[in-house]
Image (tube, rainbow, N blue to C red):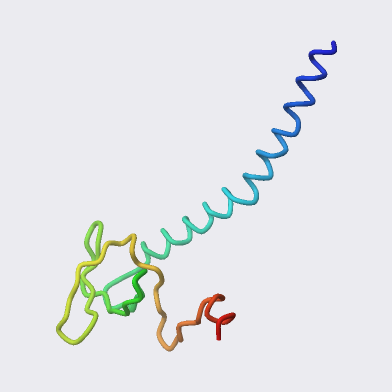
Length: 104
């Protein structure tokens, strides 16, 4: 009986730690990933995008794993879908991140 009580005493905190870890780290990350994948699936020809590198561009062609993006007049680049950070909607200003707000 003593050994069984000691085992429960060790496993209970570990189980609580796993549950907390799931709700604080894994679940929010999966939500962000799902939202990003939905955003990528919604991008169509003519949409304005911002890449992870900070380039603004207009999607000219959609491929399986990439986009052909016009980043300046007559300058086109092939960009992987995974490197698209956000889709910019018409008339929407790009909001500075929290770190930029704190710095300036």
